[in-house]
Amino acid sequence: MYIQISLSNELLVEGSPKIERMSFLFDTSVDIFFIFFSKKNTPWWSSTKLKEQFEITKKIYIRNIILMNNEFINIYNNLIKLARNKDLFYIFTNKDTFSDRILIFLFHFAFFLKSFKKSNNKKYMQNFFDYSMRQIELGLREIGYGDVSINKKMKNYINVLYSIIDKIHKWDDISDKDKKEILEFYINLKGNSDKLVKYFNNYEKYLIKTSFNLFTKSVINHKF
Image 1 (tube, rainbow, N blue to C red):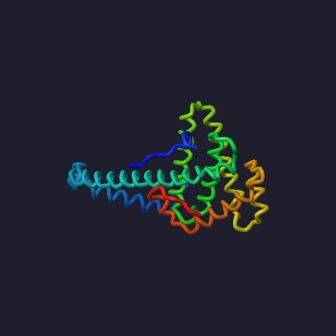
Image 2: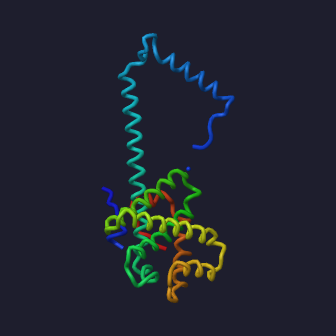
């Protein structure tokens, strides 16, 4: 059983065929069409066989969708678990608001994308990004925001995420002083910037040495 953790209550085919190839593709498709159908325009292959093939294809598709959704749930819940670290939370803020929890989550999400985007299928990662944004939107709906407010907040959250991703792009190559400035751009740390820099240094090292598949299997205990 897969249980979705909510933030609210707990805390790219391009181009087209080249012109010289189009006639070949058309001729091939015409040949296949006439081979497939008899003079009476009835399939020579049994309809039963076609139905069997269709059912097999449908089952494979459904299985892949379910598997992908389960993996997305596990990845998302792992990021939520990281973001709900109480010791880390009090470095960020003394308050416990949805926006605070979102900000903590977005930092973890940004480092996660930075670490795994190159080693994983782009479409898969894009789908997970879209899934995560939908979960945030659902969280907003749970606490009573209307469509207009949700649209504004989601646009803001996505812009903040892109901004964080851009600023941490060279995290390994910049000084701790520069890292503090990045964190303080988003958060009023009140003298706790050293702790947070150390945390995200360790978090990034942890992501580098941890298999991506581990995040997809279940919610795990993260130690770093």
